[in-house]
Length: 115
Image 1 (cartoon, rainbow, N blue to C red):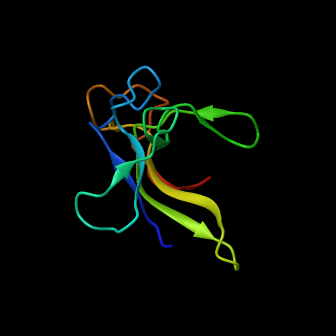
Image 2 (image 1 turned 90 degrees about the horizontal axis):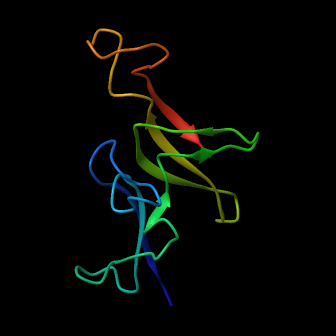
């Protein structure tokens, strides 16, 4: 029996997406048995449906990081078809060096992150 899945980014830019404000900006996982309109359900995950957060992102070395935005989710599969990693585009800060509210070490960089 087939299943359909969607990974998406969702929410107001740079707001929410935390356990205190789960309806905000974070990655969502939706699923459907048929893939038809009106049949998609947001997965009931601990962070209010957030499949991957934009804040308190943990890494293998034990560090954590907050991002302004995480977008363009893609699953990376191994040779047998099993998911092994998540690739997302991340934005450090919406404020860059040429903007009035810039305070180092903020960066306006965006890059691809594999987790």
